[in-house]
Image 1: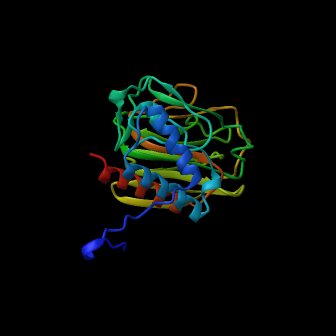
Image 2 (image 1 turned 45 degrees about the horizontal axis):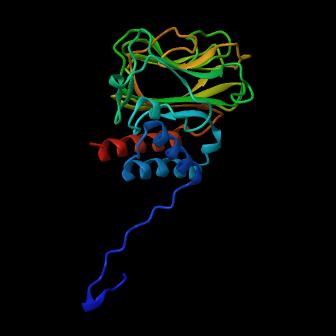
Image 3 (image 1 turned 180 degrees about the vertical axis):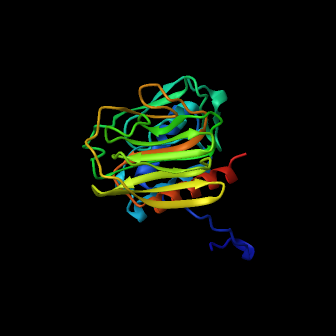
Length: 269
Protein backbone atom coordinates (compact mmCIF):
# COMPACT_ATOMS: atom_id res chain seq x y z
CA UNK A 1 0.00 0.00 0.00
CA UNK A 2 1.51 3.40 -0.94
CA UNK A 3 2.32 5.68 2.01
CA UNK A 4 1.90 9.40 2.39
CA UNK A 5 3.61 11.74 4.82
CA UNK A 6 2.81 11.49 8.55
CA UNK A 7 2.49 7.73 8.23
CA UNK A 8 -0.82 7.88 6.29
CA UNK A 9 -1.62 5.29 3.63
CA UNK A 10 -3.94 5.30 0.63
CA UNK A 11 -6.15 2.25 0.07
CA UNK A 12 -5.30 0.31 -3.06
CA UNK A 13 -7.96 0.11 -5.78
CA UNK A 14 -8.55 -3.22 -7.46
CA UNK A 15 -8.13 -2.87 -11.21
CA UNK A 16 -10.18 -5.09 -13.52
CA UNK A 17 -8.38 -6.17 -16.67
CA UNK A 18 -11.06 -6.31 -19.35
CA UNK A 19 -11.22 -9.04 -21.98
CA UNK A 20 -10.94 -7.57 -25.49
CA UNK A 21 -14.27 -9.05 -26.67
CA UNK A 22 -16.04 -7.83 -23.54
CA UNK A 23 -14.51 -4.37 -23.98
CA UNK A 24 -15.67 -4.17 -27.62
CA UNK A 25 -19.19 -5.33 -26.69
CA UNK A 26 -19.47 -2.83 -23.83
CA UNK A 27 -18.34 -0.01 -26.12
CA UNK A 28 -20.99 -0.98 -28.69
CA UNK A 29 -23.73 -1.07 -26.03
CA UNK A 30 -22.69 2.32 -24.68
CA UNK A 31 -22.71 3.77 -28.20
CA UNK A 32 -26.24 2.45 -28.75
CA UNK A 33 -27.37 3.71 -25.34
CA UNK A 34 -25.77 7.11 -25.82
CA UNK A 35 -24.17 6.98 -22.36
CA UNK A 36 -21.81 4.89 -20.28
CA UNK A 37 -22.74 1.83 -18.26
CA UNK A 38 -22.06 1.64 -14.55
CA UNK A 39 -18.71 0.08 -13.73
CA UNK A 40 -20.46 -2.73 -11.83
CA UNK A 41 -22.39 -3.64 -14.99
CA UNK A 42 -19.22 -3.54 -17.07
CA UNK A 43 -17.46 -5.84 -14.61
CA UNK A 44 -20.39 -8.29 -14.62
CA UNK A 45 -20.30 -8.48 -18.42
CA UNK A 46 -16.55 -8.91 -18.46
CA UNK A 47 -16.78 -11.71 -15.88
CA UNK A 48 -19.35 -13.46 -18.04
CA UNK A 49 -17.31 -13.26 -21.25
CA UNK A 50 -14.04 -14.23 -19.58
CA UNK A 51 -15.81 -17.07 -17.76
CA UNK A 52 -17.27 -18.47 -20.99
CA UNK A 53 -13.75 -18.52 -22.43
CA UNK A 54 -12.38 -20.23 -19.35
CA UNK A 55 -15.13 -22.87 -19.63
CA UNK A 56 -14.38 -23.46 -23.32
CA UNK A 57 -17.87 -22.49 -24.53
CA UNK A 58 -17.27 -19.02 -25.98
CA UNK A 59 -16.35 -20.20 -29.49
CA UNK A 60 -19.50 -22.35 -29.70
CA UNK A 61 -21.73 -19.27 -29.34
CA UNK A 62 -22.50 -17.98 -32.84
CA UNK A 63 -25.35 -15.55 -32.17
CA UNK A 64 -26.29 -14.05 -28.81
CA UNK A 65 -27.68 -11.00 -27.02
CA UNK A 66 -27.54 -10.07 -23.36
CA UNK A 67 -30.96 -8.42 -23.16
CA UNK A 68 -30.34 -6.84 -19.74
CA UNK A 69 -27.92 -4.38 -18.22
CA UNK A 70 -28.06 -1.92 -21.10
CA UNK A 71 -29.91 1.36 -20.58
CA UNK A 72 -32.08 1.19 -23.72
CA UNK A 73 -33.77 -1.32 -26.00
CA UNK A 74 -31.22 -0.43 -28.67
CA UNK A 75 -28.41 -1.30 -26.26
CA UNK A 76 -30.12 -4.51 -25.15
CA UNK A 77 -30.15 -5.92 -28.67
CA UNK A 78 -26.55 -5.10 -29.52
CA UNK A 79 -25.19 -8.55 -30.35
CA UNK A 80 -22.74 -10.10 -27.94
CA UNK A 81 -21.79 -12.28 -30.91
CA UNK A 82 -23.10 -12.66 -34.44
CA UNK A 83 -25.63 -10.65 -36.41
CA UNK A 84 -27.63 -7.86 -34.84
CA UNK A 85 -31.26 -9.00 -34.54
CA UNK A 86 -34.06 -6.92 -36.03
CA UNK A 87 -36.35 -5.36 -33.43
CA UNK A 88 -40.01 -5.84 -34.22
CA UNK A 89 -42.09 -3.49 -32.05
CA UNK A 90 -40.25 -3.56 -28.72
CA UNK A 91 -40.28 -0.12 -27.04
CA UNK A 92 -38.71 1.22 -23.85
CA UNK A 93 -41.80 0.34 -21.80
CA UNK A 94 -41.18 -3.34 -22.59
CA UNK A 95 -37.67 -3.26 -21.15
CA UNK A 96 -36.28 -3.82 -17.68
CA UNK A 97 -32.54 -3.52 -17.10
CA UNK A 98 -32.75 -6.37 -14.57
CA UNK A 99 -35.28 -8.65 -16.28
CA UNK A 100 -34.99 -8.00 -20.00
CA UNK A 101 -37.59 -7.64 -22.74
CA UNK A 102 -41.26 -8.55 -22.37
CA UNK A 103 -43.14 -10.22 -25.22
CA UNK A 104 -46.82 -9.56 -25.86
CA UNK A 105 -48.11 -12.65 -27.75
CA UNK A 106 -49.07 -10.39 -30.65
CA UNK A 107 -46.36 -8.58 -32.58
CA UNK A 108 -43.18 -8.15 -30.53
CA UNK A 109 -40.19 -10.32 -31.42
CA UNK A 110 -36.58 -10.34 -32.56
CA UNK A 111 -35.66 -11.69 -35.99
CA UNK A 112 -32.16 -13.13 -35.57
CA UNK A 113 -31.24 -12.98 -39.26
CA UNK A 114 -30.31 -16.67 -39.20
CA UNK A 115 -31.97 -19.64 -40.85
CA UNK A 116 -32.44 -23.10 -39.39
CA UNK A 117 -30.79 -24.55 -42.50
CA UNK A 118 -27.54 -22.61 -41.93
CA UNK A 119 -25.40 -25.69 -41.38
CA UNK A 120 -22.19 -23.66 -41.43
CA UNK A 121 -23.13 -21.97 -38.17
CA UNK A 122 -25.49 -24.65 -36.83
CA UNK A 123 -24.46 -28.05 -38.22
CA UNK A 124 -27.03 -30.83 -38.23
CA UNK A 125 -25.20 -32.76 -35.51
CA UNK A 126 -23.45 -29.89 -33.78
CA UNK A 127 -25.84 -27.22 -32.50
CA UNK A 128 -27.31 -25.61 -29.41
CA UNK A 129 -29.97 -23.06 -28.50
CA UNK A 130 -30.64 -21.38 -25.18
CA UNK A 131 -32.52 -18.56 -23.51
CA UNK A 132 -33.04 -17.13 -20.03
CA UNK A 133 -36.68 -16.69 -18.99
CA UNK A 134 -37.01 -14.08 -16.25
CA UNK A 135 -40.82 -14.18 -16.15
CA UNK A 136 -42.86 -17.11 -17.48
CA UNK A 137 -45.41 -16.76 -20.23
CA UNK A 138 -49.11 -16.13 -19.65
CA UNK A 139 -50.23 -17.26 -23.11
CA UNK A 140 -50.78 -20.90 -24.03
CA UNK A 141 -48.43 -21.38 -26.99
CA UNK A 142 -45.30 -19.63 -28.18
CA UNK A 143 -41.70 -19.82 -29.31
CA UNK A 144 -39.11 -18.68 -26.79
CA UNK A 145 -36.23 -19.05 -29.25
CA UNK A 146 -35.70 -20.84 -32.55
CA UNK A 147 -38.03 -21.94 -35.30
CA UNK A 148 -41.56 -23.19 -35.64
CA UNK A 149 -42.98 -25.78 -33.26
CA UNK A 150 -42.93 -28.60 -35.80
CA UNK A 151 -41.33 -32.03 -35.54
CA UNK A 152 -40.42 -32.15 -39.22
CA UNK A 153 -37.52 -30.41 -40.86
CA UNK A 154 -34.73 -30.92 -38.36
CA UNK A 155 -35.60 -27.77 -36.41
CA UNK A 156 -33.99 -26.29 -33.31
CA UNK A 157 -36.40 -24.63 -30.91
CA UNK A 158 -37.42 -23.86 -27.35
CA UNK A 159 -41.15 -23.36 -27.05
CA UNK A 160 -44.23 -24.11 -24.94
CA UNK A 161 -47.64 -25.58 -25.66
CA UNK A 162 -49.49 -24.53 -22.49
CA UNK A 163 -48.85 -21.91 -19.80
CA UNK A 164 -47.16 -24.63 -17.76
CA UNK A 165 -45.47 -26.86 -20.33
CA UNK A 166 -42.07 -26.28 -21.93
CA UNK A 167 -40.94 -28.26 -24.98
CA UNK A 168 -37.70 -28.44 -26.93
CA UNK A 169 -36.41 -29.96 -30.17
CA UNK A 170 -32.99 -30.24 -31.72
CA UNK A 171 -32.82 -31.45 -35.32
CA UNK A 172 -35.14 -34.45 -34.84
CA UNK A 173 -38.75 -35.63 -34.73
CA UNK A 174 -38.41 -36.38 -31.02
CA UNK A 175 -39.03 -33.67 -28.44
CA UNK A 176 -38.77 -33.36 -24.68
CA UNK A 177 -41.49 -31.84 -22.49
CA UNK A 178 -41.91 -30.87 -18.84
CA UNK A 179 -45.30 -29.89 -17.46
CA UNK A 180 -44.02 -26.88 -15.53
CA UNK A 181 -43.60 -23.25 -16.59
CA UNK A 182 -40.07 -22.24 -17.59
CA UNK A 183 -38.28 -19.78 -15.32
CA UNK A 184 -34.52 -19.31 -15.59
CA UNK A 185 -32.10 -20.92 -18.06
CA UNK A 186 -33.47 -23.20 -20.81
CA UNK A 187 -31.39 -24.93 -23.46
CA UNK A 188 -30.57 -27.93 -25.60
CA UNK A 189 -27.47 -29.17 -27.39
CA UNK A 190 -26.65 -31.93 -29.91
CA UNK A 191 -23.21 -33.35 -30.70
CA UNK A 192 -24.21 -36.59 -32.50
CA UNK A 193 -26.85 -38.00 -34.83
CA UNK A 194 -28.64 -40.21 -32.28
CA UNK A 195 -29.68 -37.95 -29.41
CA UNK A 196 -29.53 -34.51 -27.85
CA UNK A 197 -29.33 -33.16 -24.32
CA UNK A 198 -31.66 -30.62 -22.79
CA UNK A 199 -31.62 -28.57 -19.58
CA UNK A 200 -34.80 -26.94 -18.28
CA UNK A 201 -35.21 -24.70 -15.25
CA UNK A 202 -38.59 -24.33 -13.55
CA UNK A 203 -39.87 -23.36 -10.11
CA UNK A 204 -39.09 -26.95 -9.09
CA UNK A 205 -35.42 -26.63 -10.04
CA UNK A 206 -33.19 -27.91 -12.84
CA UNK A 207 -34.15 -30.91 -14.96
CA UNK A 208 -31.66 -32.52 -17.34
CA UNK A 209 -32.24 -35.35 -19.82
CA UNK A 210 -30.75 -37.06 -22.85
CA UNK A 211 -33.42 -37.30 -25.53
CA UNK A 212 -33.29 -40.14 -28.06
CA UNK A 213 -34.07 -38.47 -31.37
CA UNK A 214 -32.28 -39.13 -34.67
CA UNK A 215 -31.32 -35.90 -36.42
CA UNK A 216 -32.86 -34.91 -39.74
CA UNK A 217 -31.84 -32.57 -42.52
CA UNK A 218 -32.49 -28.95 -41.45
CA UNK A 219 -35.33 -27.22 -43.27
CA UNK A 220 -35.54 -23.57 -44.28
CA UNK A 221 -37.02 -21.90 -41.21
CA UNK A 222 -36.14 -18.44 -39.91
CA UNK A 223 -34.98 -18.32 -36.31
CA UNK A 224 -36.45 -15.82 -33.89
CA UNK A 225 -36.68 -14.87 -30.22
CA UNK A 226 -40.12 -14.27 -28.61
CA UNK A 227 -41.54 -15.82 -31.80
CA UNK A 228 -40.50 -17.95 -34.74
CA UNK A 229 -38.39 -15.96 -37.16
CA UNK A 230 -41.20 -15.60 -39.67
CA UNK A 231 -43.26 -13.60 -37.14
CA UNK A 232 -45.61 -16.31 -35.87
CA UNK A 233 -46.18 -18.28 -32.65
CA UNK A 234 -45.55 -15.24 -30.44
CA UNK A 235 -44.59 -15.46 -26.77
CA UNK A 236 -45.60 -13.32 -23.79
CA UNK A 237 -42.60 -14.37 -21.70
CA UNK A 238 -39.95 -11.95 -20.46
CA UNK A 239 -36.37 -12.92 -21.38
CA UNK A 240 -32.91 -11.49 -20.79
CA UNK A 241 -30.57 -13.69 -22.87
CA UNK A 242 -30.45 -15.97 -25.88
CA UNK A 243 -27.75 -17.87 -27.74
CA UNK A 244 -27.62 -20.08 -30.81
CA UNK A 245 -24.59 -21.92 -32.06
CA UNK A 246 -22.66 -25.15 -31.98
CA UNK A 247 -22.80 -27.80 -29.27
CA UNK A 248 -21.54 -26.89 -25.82
CA UNK A 249 -21.84 -27.84 -22.15
CA UNK A 250 -25.25 -26.59 -21.04
CA UNK A 251 -24.44 -26.61 -17.34
CA UNK A 252 -21.47 -24.30 -17.94
CA UNK A 253 -23.53 -21.86 -19.99
CA UNK A 254 -26.34 -22.00 -17.42
CA UNK A 255 -23.94 -21.20 -14.60
CA UNK A 256 -22.45 -18.22 -16.43
CA UNK A 257 -25.78 -16.78 -17.61
CA UNK A 258 -27.51 -17.27 -14.26
CA UNK A 259 -24.60 -15.65 -12.41
CA UNK A 260 -24.70 -12.72 -14.83
CA UNK A 261 -28.42 -12.16 -14.32
CA UNK A 262 -28.16 -12.52 -10.56
CA UNK A 263 -25.31 -10.04 -10.48
CA UNK A 264 -27.12 -7.48 -12.65
CA UNK A 265 -30.19 -7.75 -10.43
CA UNK A 266 -28.04 -7.05 -7.38
CA UNK A 267 -26.01 -4.09 -8.71
CA UNK A 268 -28.73 -2.21 -10.63
CA UNK A 269 -31.15 0.07 -8.80
